[in-house]
Image (cartoon, rainbow, N blue to C red; front, side, top):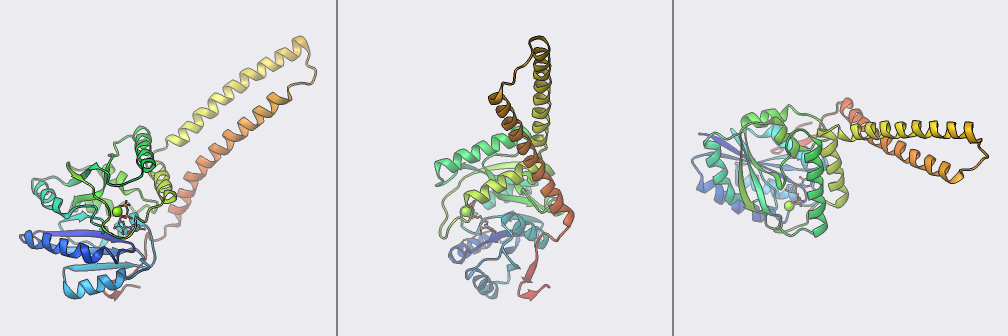
Length: 312
Ligand code: UDP
Ligand code: MG
């Protein structure tokens, strides 16, 4: 019998879990030609999520949980899940039922046909503010044009991954993760299914603008060197202009002499160049920061317990 794993990262989801569980059992009962495993990753929740998970596991041995020692963020929580799931394929879903489990049988059908990565594409994005939609669109455009492979738009983490994809993703241990880009990077046979993304059933979205911004920076820096290249190009252009202007000033001084003037242009130049230098330094800094983090070679996450057993 083939084994299917459901991977569900949870951060403060005590309110949604009681609603999620019946949906999952419905799904598992309906598709009982498979063996099922549910892998919850508790990402350092500060509410009763852990108690809820323990209760669920007592009731239902198909439920498993990994309890991380603190909040590591969804990307890392998913990596922990990749390490712990044992299925022949895995389906990642959010705990808040924004990803409808009803779509899973269709995904499984495509998997049986031989597709290795069946991803769900949102037809609509649910209730999100206008600004958030615009920013997200801008980000994808930027990423699209700066990296060499396609990062799909309106595609989230809701997808089915074959064992080969799970193993490939497990080999990518970088700590500043942008998993959406990795699914594309690893390749494999992909298939799209469409769905309408609803709203959260309860609780609150835990992403604020600052976190989204930092995810966007991670996305761009981990998949593209374009920002570095842009600063090189700007540097070259500015040096060229500076050289031409230098010749101009030199010749002017030789031919017409040069009483001291030009304070405004001097200040402008200093400010302009200072700005560009700081910007380039900042860009280089972003990359160096990432190099620094990766070279520390720390484990990506720390597990407190797995299914009630302490790991450390
Ligand atoms: N999540 C997580 N760690 C975090 C933030 C979120 O594991 O630090 C989980 C959360 O419990 C949910 C999923 O990631 O299952 C998606 O989170 P959320 O619904 O807040 O994001 P959105 O749907 O707004 O993108
Ligand atoms: Mg959500």
